[in-house]
Length: 110
Length: 114
Image: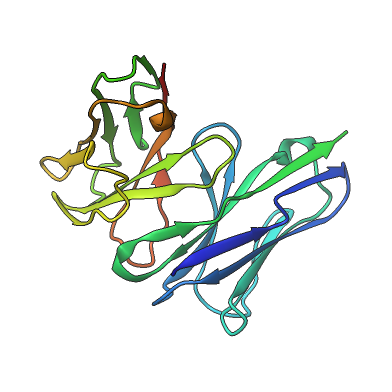
């Protein structure tokens, strides 16, 4: 059965801390791995990863994929209160379907 | 450019009534997805459209749920005889093609069944 597992389920940190969010997957016919930030309703796109070992960066956020070990991490450095959100990992598999994890809820305390 | 839009943004209905949720994808996006997100849960895949056809309906939780798409654009998700467990946020997403492309999400419809 295809699945995506995220950890931790929730995380509380102080501003300025660095956090690492994890996403492991077992998905047939892997196509891509996506990270989203969900603050209210609509998830907003962060990164799409298709190749192992190539880090993608956007400001304080970065992500990397390991297709051999079947996982990805999302790093956020120098966290700010605006980073508080649920971070979703999704994996594109066979049949054009995307499988989502349950997300990691991040709370950044001032 | 316009993003994915959904309507209504909120819907409160009584148990047993039918509801229709609408999704307008980004213009030119051929693939359209419906997801359900219950409180504190991840996104649950419901159905996927490529053009007007739905090659993957595997996620529809029961025969009370149906969806259609016309003109390769607007899609409606219909829930018949709603139950309280149908209460959730229903999210729509679209992309240019299914393979490898990221999805762009609409703001969702929050459904509450009393």
